[in-house]
Image 1: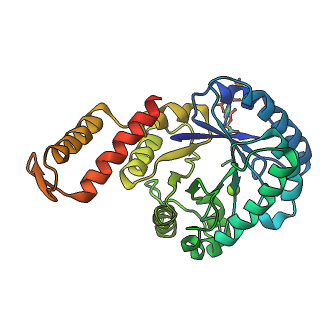
Image 2 (image 1 turned 60 degrees about the horizontal axis):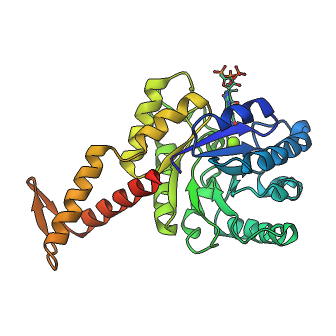
Image 3 (image 1 turned 60 degrees about the vertical axis):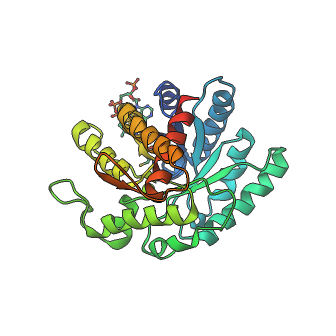
Length: 291
Ligand code: COA
Ligand code: MG
């Protein structure tokens, strides 16, 4: 998944638009973009949309962001949406492996009740609280359902009591840069994809592009979007470019042609095992995207 587009769970209009957006996945939101009074209605709208969207031939992956574990809302969230068979559940304000295994148990019960296969995955937003930062090392091995991990800067700044999370230049301040890096390490430790957080200034196309490029550079596999205009740049930037693919293929061919060789030179650069692994991963990603 390169692009994951947030859509408020109580807006059938935006849900329909989102289906045409080209996003690899939709995140149907029952949490912060839905007012408390609108939650019951949002659950019903979202479940109806899941049923409709699932029937489409080339559909995006369908993720539902439920409310946080501590809100007392999640039993009703899961009861309403699991019969719609979402592909994944996004857990906001997740604080570690215990939270995702707790959610995994709740999902397993609903899968059994709804006669669904054991396959609904979990994507935690893992840096939305100070406590969550200290739980980042505990996701690895917590549940087989973990399919990706993402981070958040907006709720974290609320938890910290910060005035802002960005400098005037648009760059994140130190606490959020740290959270971003730790999210990358947590995803690598758990061997799942890291997904970059949202960019809320949705009219700032240039700032958005720069943030996508920085995310790809650092190892994120994709990025969450809040507006349909953000989808095309994400898909473009997080797809391997023809040049990158050609380079990866050259590296793979070179190692294939020199079996048993650990280190080798190409265009004046030393290549060894990590370079080969990176090339193989990029090639695998390109093949998968072409399917
Ligand atoms: N998904 C699907 N469609 C969307 C959309 C989204 N996330 N955001 C905007 N659109 C639609 C609008 O409905 C509008 O279509 P319409 O004219 O046919 O009604 C069109 O795209 C253009 O929208 P625009 O006028 O540029 O933006 P807006 O002012 O209507 O909406 C937001 C701005 C931020 C309210 C909106 O983008 C949004 O709801 N984003 C998602 C918020 C969210 O889920 N947040 C939680 C995670 S942080
Ligand atoms: Mg939030």
